[in-house]
Every structure is written in C-alpha cells, then in structure tokens.
Length: 245
Image 1 (tube, rainbow, N blue to C red):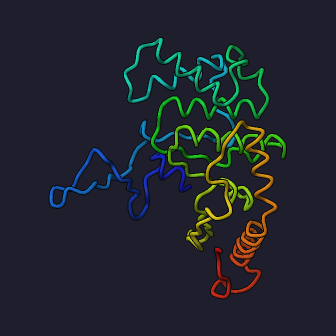
Image 2 (cartoon, helix red, strand yellow; image 1 turned 90 degrees about the vertical axis):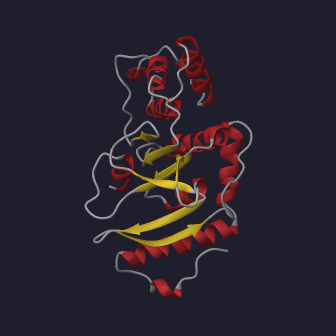
C-alpha cells in the first residue's frame, strides 16, 4: 500500500506523503520546500511484481515510448539512442526487436526496469519485482539492478519479503508490520551491503555471494529475521535486540 501512496495512485486517509522538491524554496529561509504527493507524476516510476510491458510493442519501442514522458524534450533520434543505451545497460540490446511474449520472465523484468529509467524519474518504486523468479534469475537481476543504480543513481524504494535481498540491495532497511501498519525498525546496512558495485553483471553477482558469507551479514540477517518473527507473535521482545554493527 505504501507504494501506491508514494506513487500517488491512492490518496492518504490520514497524514500526507511529501517529497523534497529542489524547484521549490521556503520564502522565509530559502531552504528546499516539501511538496505533497497526491497524484501520479513523471518524477516517479514503478516496477511492478509482474511485468507490464505493452504486448503489441517491441522491447525497443516499449522503452522508447517511456522516454516520451520524460522531462527532456529531446529529438526522436536522441530518444532512440537513449533507449539503445538503456537496453545495453540491462543487457538486452540483442532482444530489442522482440516482443514481450518472446522474452523470459527475467528478460521482461529487465525490459521493465529499462522502460522506467527511460522516463528519467527521480524516484523508482519497486514492488517485489523479483519475487516470482527462480533463484538464479533473481540473483542476476539483483546484480543488474545494482549495476543500473550505480550508473544513474535514482532513489529506489524497494519492497521485498526477503530479508537477504533487503540487506544486499539496500542502504537502509525499514521493517514494517501490519494491523496497524507501523515501522518496527529503520536499520542502516551499508556496512554489510555492496556499496560500490563494479564490473559486469557476473562479477557483481559474485560480490553479492561473497557479501552473503560475511559474518556481519549473517548476524544482521538473523537479527532482522528475529525482529519480523517477533512482530508475528514469536521470538524475543524488540527492546532486547540491538541492531546494526
């Protein structure tokens, strides 16, 4: 639900969703002002759990269409060049002329990521995008996402039910519970993540596997898992669980 609120698809029933807007300043002190999110906008892109590519368009045209909604007023040739660069970024140039039904699930997700980035959003919302994939494809796309983020560095809000995935991909992990919705912990994980991914997808995937074997990673994964279990009525009290390094 929080993705729908941030995306502006549903109105908040209480409170407000705000984002810092560099184009706005407070008259009193000149600092960057907050803007209320109450509708979808081109500053936010969404990668859904199930790919939502247009089936009648090729992969290239799916990506290029998204660039029509970007803030840049580039020529059609420039947008086509940008689409090619993004497909190269997610290793899909060889499939540019294929249609969605000709792609595997992992390839469709990579195309969806490229399409979102083509609109040049400031924030990318990812709603369990790798949840339905097999372990190998999931690892490959985790590496691809880190490589892509390292190139453009948009803000990414990533929803996942995998503690391991949250630690691997995040700079901070926000643990939430339902009924009522609340934040249990906001944990910085930079000390165990892969902060500066380098190389191609395979080498980054190897870095991820190496990170998972780190004792600090194993400890934090256990602590967060215990925290989630306690939220469901199991495990030890929250106050007795120190988190972090």
